[in-house]
Amino acid sequence: MNKILTFLLSGLIKVYRYALSPYLPANCRYHPTCSAYALDALHLHGPVKGSWLTLKRLGRCHPWGGQGYDPVPEGANKCHECEVKSSERVSIE
Image (cartoon, rainbow, N blue to C red; front, side, top):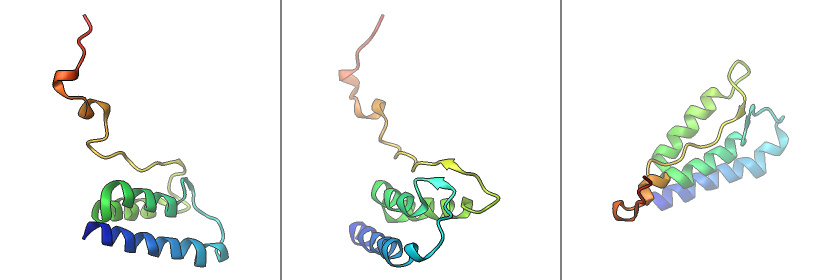
């Protein structure tokens, strides 16, 4: 079910990017753009959390908001420490 929702939401974002966005002025204050951020968030975090992160980002993207580099946060299990099993850790003394 999550893959279907992610596919549908990604499709809506792609329709916006290719059908509507070329006719609107470029005014995203962040890099990556809000639509690229939304696609990344959906693929990294799934439809629920990805949509929430996208809504938060859209809420920040206004003339009095911030600007600059604002990537999608990594998932909780994406750190190097989580991928290394306890038996594989190397002790440095």
